[in-house]
Image (tube, rainbow, N blue to C red; front, side, top):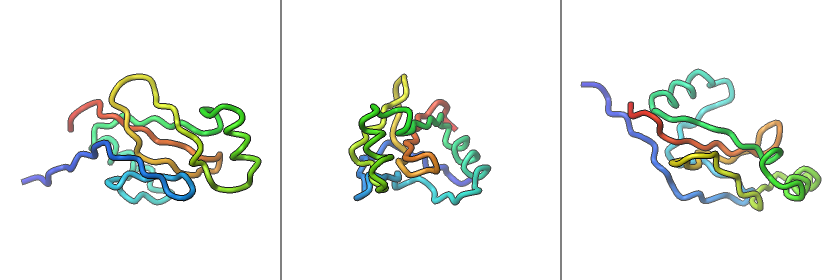
Length: 109
């Protein structure tokens, strides 16, 4: 009997002291786990979209983050992609500054 897939569901976004968040049911992917991550997204039937503070936030918010020199983005509320059903998977720092990963179910596995 095949193992039942536990589908990730929307969860409350509780950000840490730096404004970061990771969905409690998101697997712990490491840098370089791109293929593993893509396979999980496909298995979950998710569409994923990335929104970055640099391009999403108003200039004063982006400037506040990039000029402060501190890894804190709690004052940024990431914009949701167009359409229904999006929920936050993670808000984390990248080489280009904070990014928010949104997901929504497009197909049932």
